Amino acid sequence: MPVELISANHAAALSATLAARANRTGRGFCGGVYPITPATDCMEYLCNQSIAKSSVVRVESEHSAMGVCIGASASGARTFTTTSSNGLAYMAENCVTAACLRLPIIMMVANRTMGPPWNIWADHGDSLMLRDLGWIQIYCADNQEVFDTVLMAFRLGEDAGVMMPVMVCMDGFTLSHTIAQITVPEQEDVDSFLPPTAIPHGMGRTPHALGQMEVARQVAGHRFQHHLAMADVLRVYGEIQDSFVDSFARRPADAVVAYRVEDAELVVVSMGTIGATAELVVDELRRAGERVGCLRIRVFRPLPALEIAGFFAGVRRVAVIDRDISLGFGGVLWGELRGLAPGDVIVQNYIAGIGGGDVRPQHIKRIIAELREKDTAGEPIIMEDLL
Image (cartoon, rainbow, N blue to C red; front, side, top):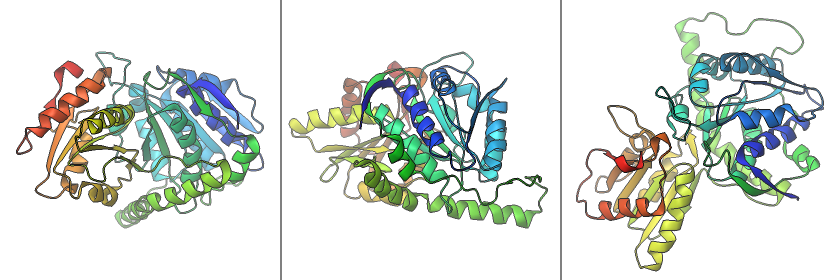
């Protein structure tokens, strides 16, 4: 397989391009696109690709971009778009529509701080704002993961038992504009991995309306079906990992990436690029004889709660680093994980890097040192010098 030196923005667009070409024997490909920093490079790259049976529609807003994807997906096409921050907020209404209609739209989100005041740097508040809409959410730590995850997202979202949209999230600028080597498969290998898109409830060639009026019983039934399908995503994800190995001879990252946790007394938990930094810190502290490990949560929706709880068993202290804040509460990731640890485990929240602040090895070492001195968990700690 060839190796290319490209940004994560280009990696996402290249992956989407290969997936789009793989649907040439189906209903083709369509994407609605509107620029926003730091995701613009992704859509610009996509607009310049030659794809049979495709249409990349340049629209006047993010709301319309998702609207184009809804119409295209409902007609049976493979669909992709990308956005960030306030653009994601502007398309939120249509994100609800895409999820409720169970349309397998893939969206790359370059995580960026919500404004105003305006800030173009990374935090996870934008995608986490939409965590309960019925989208699968996956967070990446490097460029290769971005490429692989976009390919997996098409297979996952279009699975007959799943049928729902997928967000592939990456830290804005930290990944989106960082150049790295990635392995790119040949088109025929992608063709073997991605079967043609088949949306059983799509409109096909007979025009009809979607999203009709429903009574309470019907709405509850659809939500319950959606919930059951979401609960089955992790099993399907594992099957897709196996298929990925068969097609590309390498295994993509697990839903929860565990690093040196087998005998750890203290575990650092995070999402995105902070997780890669945490692994470097773990290696350094292990050489000094400290029993530390780390978990990187890749699949946030559905949350792999049983797997995470298993990693927490036997641990004495857990530091959850959130690159986000639920105002008046604390970190979103911490809020979801703190109940998964046994009662005698100290689970402390640290909020760091929101607004794009660097979270460096020395900062994670400081968090670990601070947590070692705690006898009980306290209120979320805002690392003000890391904001």
